[in-house]
Image (cartoon, rainbow, N blue to C red; front, side, top):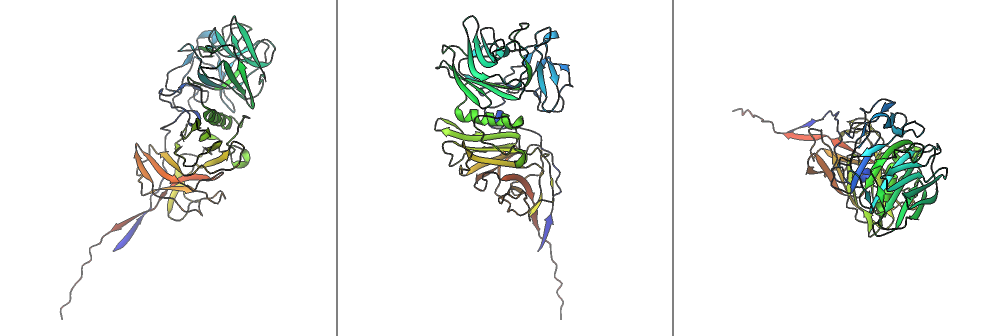
Length: 438
């Protein structure tokens, strides 16, 4: 009997394909079936999943397409169009100094008395009050009114409601509003600042008819808009923390109230891509199944306690299984892309959320089998996988998705990736014996 070892030479490309909770940070889905109703991303203006086909710098924007699956696209024509700008972060820029107001109209109109919305912006202080979402009845304001330099909310013809939070002019900021249908409070968050703003009645809410307003020299949108999210249900406390951390990591570590993901720091290696997470604030404020914009889905933690989170992101390495140097014995090649984990409490203390189930969407790869797939975890946190023991027992979940259930080896700050093991094929050879007669 002879053993034949077949080594697969693998340079394999994986396209993006989402499953599970594929919304921002893994909160909501992108098929229009969840509470995520608007998702505008300036790094993918046409929402086709391809970040390389955006307009050139200075192009007038006629449509900012919705990535949520709800087809709530924002459009504009003529001189009212904002412009597309390219740079460290691509943006849709609204020039409030222009002679004609620049705004974009949603294909849907109305407001949510129960909802959450997030804006990643860099607003410019040009004098007028600066509008985020508006519908002619209600308005969310990056600056409440002329030269007040305070974030707020307006009910036209009734009152202007101003927070004590300073307008974040000239800096990248996450501005978010959260409203419960039974409350008259509108919770406002700007980077690390938070405030419950009483807007006078429970039947007021978050408008979404347009970005900006067609009023010259007043109430206009201002500056760069990088990303906008809108949910038609108020996110729970754990989900807000997860979305905040996704946005903060994506846009160069914007300060946020509760930072439970530090792998996006320069010292940690800038694992700030496709950040997603699970977490729990208490029994009614939890989120235990996430995938986000990447190929990794994590769910079913067995020991997720109050104020504990498990977040992950990657280093933007290519989706190729072509690393043949930093691999342990028994491995043919591993992914070039590496992920890193923050498993901490809301105070930043390392915790253990228990066993987790991991899934990898490997659409586009041929030849993958459960017997060949391996999970690699950098258990000694030295930045290398060549000294690790590969984890086998992958499960074929169908649809080119593979899972590893009950994973225990991942912990705070550790890295992981996946790889292919060498296949051993046993072949039988016919052996002929010649019998020599005496």
